[in-house]
Length: 119
Image 1: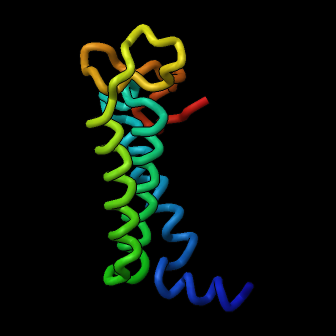
Image 2: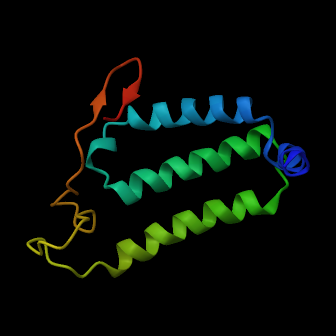
């Protein structure tokens, strides 16, 4: 296990530093005025991208996997947004973000000026 952790630190950076930066980026995103209308997939994608950005800035910025991961997460959302066909009244539809006129139903989130917190 130590070998794996040592190798990851070379590419990903010091875990403490990565964690701090990722949480700061996520807190900033959660304070965004449109955060509340994003659905779970959009929120998770942005949070995963923030984690990858933290690895880039704390570890090896030339590690292509970091950049590939960001592209992959963005592609998942892009595919979903361009393939949405379910109607707004479909009870099995979990996501609503395909039509800006009908924002996605999301869990309540408390957003303060200091820090955003999800239940």
